Length: 495
Image (cartoon, rainbow, N blue to C red; front, top):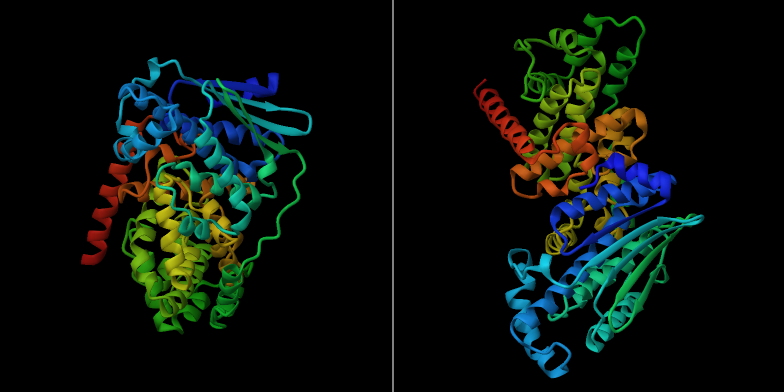
């Protein structure tokens, strides 16, 4: 297994790197994402990481399954080159192997087949070659190029998902998704070059140094943005508090008095100050004590969250349902920040984690059916992150939506960044990256606790930074975080 350091050093020294697989497993994809990040970062193209990784992963999955198919036909003694025999056994292959192919052992490691991945940084292009030592059958070739051509008629992945019903070749939707992903970052199907012979199949993904950004528009996107524009502003009563918090000569008594003029807000503030997210050593008894213990900056940030949550709950009833995940992620973020000895921005991390999915709440509320389809597609295609599919389907991700809402409500920059980059911390500005990384990790840990993600979904670079590369250590960490979260929640409810 390569280390990130060795990968980076080889790329800097030779401008290329190669991998050979007999079969591809989850940990290989885990490593591949880190490789893609490293390659693209060398030329300031990190923003392409997820799209490029998903394209490569889909191509590798298709290649892996093509090899599986050939080994299966050999195992049952069927001539895969005979069109009639091929069609007769495809349904059986799909039923027995493709639906649960990871659980089937065809001794791929000892077969004659291999997959070769070659990555090269040329003068004005990134070149990714995937080569396998088998030729495509005529029926495979026909289906593959047919799907690629059909991609022209789709403007989003959900339409394609509803339309494509190829029950025999799983590559159908995947190939269309690849083209749509490329299109979403300013590329097109011409970025893929196929070279096929009797004994070899090779596909090359070429990414030019200069890419013209795509203007993303769709009726759904416009409808969602219109909804955001219509959200009410935070109450004017916050203005006085903001001014007092920013005053160089802060008057605690005056600030406490101003907050207490709104009983509902002061009650919510006391509730949040005593919540598991903050776990102060002593129970906070009044607003003045809360200001002293947490500081005016954190009090102000908490007031932003309280007012925003009030607006969201009134407008979007689903907010209450999503709040449990937010609280768990916030608790995990607090504990992780303590674990890595992050003290400077710990409250910003805690609050950012509490509100990281604000954009998802709006998306579910406005386009619930569409969001369900996106979720189903992500599950079916074993996609680790929703943002690329959201962008291909809608034209904007829930992280971007959340950041727009936070900016509308004048959230401080660190909270806006926490929301915007919680799925892609590697793209965050340097001064906000650690906050984004902690919330990213806490969110994934919370999702793993509720069986929505796996260890191999996580950016290896972040795992290394937090000393969690060992899966046993990682699982023990989650177990400890969850135990603390449940204890704190129980105490909080009893208080």
